[in-house]
Length: 409
Ligand code: AMP
Image 1 (tube, rainbow, N blue to C red):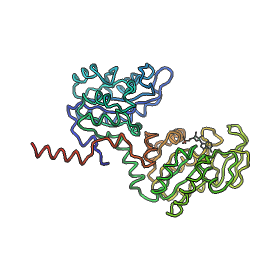
Image 2: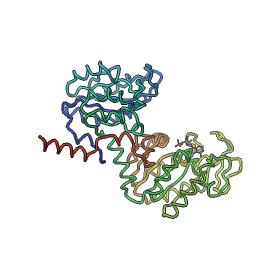
Image 3: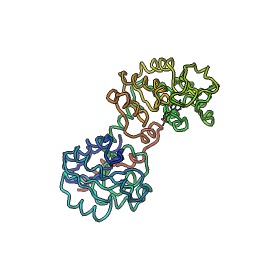
Image 4: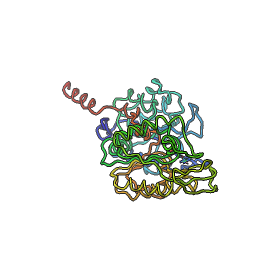
């Protein structure tokens, strides 16, 4: 990574603002039901604690749209964070202003403060320069560790970096970028990308980008039907995006020309209705009945995909192979979970539903890395630069400035 990393800077006695993604799920009583996002930031916070920094944490929570609403308060996070760190966490009821400055000025090294929801201010989502200045001005250092939000051009992700002396990546952001680099930019080959899910239109940029970088692309899920239709097959009542057919054809043509192997399902679990209790049968891709829905890949496709994956040294996976929320259409997705879990390749998984399937199968420990950033991970797969990372201080620039300071001094 060409951006500054937390370990590249001196944090002792410094007022360090850490941007985290504490957008955690709560139950009806306000209890946190999954604290993965909080735990994911502990390496950065513990590193700062050990380094003797004053730690101020900022995060968004839900979508309050600039309104100060109690159900979007970050207060429920205080207790859990405090327990995980085994130390007091001071909560401040705003993220900017006099009160924040007063508390920050009184902080001692190793104190931890959690600020109230950034999105209680409309300036946050608008990347408003005044808000960014108010947010950043009390601090010496900014650490970006909210990977899941790095695709957003918000004040606490982008504008803020112009309002603090130095901005660096935390451990979570570095880990995400390093794994991505290993999987896409500098991978051990062959690399196989497995893509599934509902809509080609959501993933077309990913398919186009990966078709220039990986060795094999496996397409499952409802997406496969647009590819099959593009090749002239009948797909019954299965989901299809007619307006994507031209684009899909051009990608397939390019892939063939450059030797990328595309694997499409060769059979399907089809159903009379889109329902868990519908009558089902397994048919080949050439025999999908006119009024039936293709809702999962069939056993022959699973065998084909497993064989294609078999010699891969790197595997990337996003999106289920079928409507896996219903048991009758979940086999294909879970067969891929098992194959990836057993593989000796570097395996990287990202995107909400894929993560859910891994959790349900109890196989989260069997993959090399599960990305914490749904949208941000998808943007990386598309080949799009993440604004929250692009805005951080450049390593070379920082070294040049430091050298100039030494020479001048
Ligand atoms: P995405 O958010 O694009 O990754 O899509 C995930 C959704 O795609 C899941 O809710 C699946 O139920 C759905 N899905 C996958 N395959 C199919 C299919 N063959 N027909 C309908 N929905 C599907």
